[in-house]
Amino acid sequence: MSPELPNRHAHDPRVTLYPTIGFPLAGGQVWRVIIQGRISQDAPASFGKRLMLKGLIRALDLSREEASSELFGERIDGFLTSPIAGQRIQVELAGQHYVLRRKSKRSGLFSCKLDLPAKQLRGFKSFGQILKLDEDSSASRRSTADHQTQATESLTANPISAGCPVLLAEESGISVVSDIDDTIKLTEVTSRRRMLQRTFAIPFEPIEGMADVYQHWANQGALFHYVSSSPWQIYSPIDRFLRSENFPVGSMHLKWFRLRDEIFKRWQILRRKSKSGVIRGLMKRLPNRSFVLVGDSGEKDPEIYAKIASKFPKQVIRICIRQIEANPLDGPRLDAIYRRHGMIVPIQVFSNAVQLGDVISG
Image (cartoon, rainbow, N blue to C red; front, top):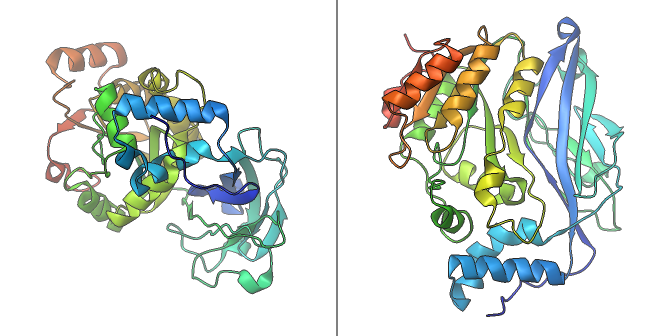
């Protein structure tokens, strides 16, 4: 069956900015903001992408109607856009314009660090949404929303807009690192077929009660960092899911998947590559903050989190693991973790979100 691709107009650029963080340096006199995103364009799908799409449709056993649906189109959109390499992005941050030093990569991804004097951020919240990145540098299109700034890149005569939140992480406080798949969103990662179906062909389904608990923690002052092995290419659907289900705003840390013939056959193998580096990076950037790590037993979250706790014993104050029946965190597995890494932090295993209580257990 030949998939019906959505209409794409060549050279129609777009910028996606990913929610990120800012943190203090030099005793709080300077704040460093990490800018991250991707620049791409709509273009007719290449032969390789068409083959990839046909393989995915076969793997999911989709009907022609399902393959042509709006939902499926939204989920595969990030895989079909063509990257724009070698572009410099201009950002407006707290009323000042900056041109990012690093150009976009072959993948279209770009990232850069910006150091700002603390006085420039006066009037912004210490945590919460403060940054808006926008691909239009004209003053007439600046956002006037509170706690937002902009980033811009003029690629065409008719620039387009994009935005994302940046959260300022105070030097001390509580940061919650949360997995996404099977922790707050049902994905069934222990089954490759079901995981692909839930990723590309089925409406996202929240884990009951997790949004309420996270909002409760946010009200207690926690800052959120969503760290997942899900691909950046489905960031937009994930972002819409988080907003529609009322999860707190948080920085986003996903994984870039390169397009290859075997990508969907090797999906689970690619997912298993450790996300510990991202979490370690957060802890090194935020050395005086306390961390709560939330994940599930379906893959390697218990082992990853326990190892991180052994390396950062003064920062990790709590580990919470949602129990997955297909791969439970049972006694032998838990004993093996404690033998290898020690009981630096007791691991709380939960089946229902209400068991989590306050962000810091009394």
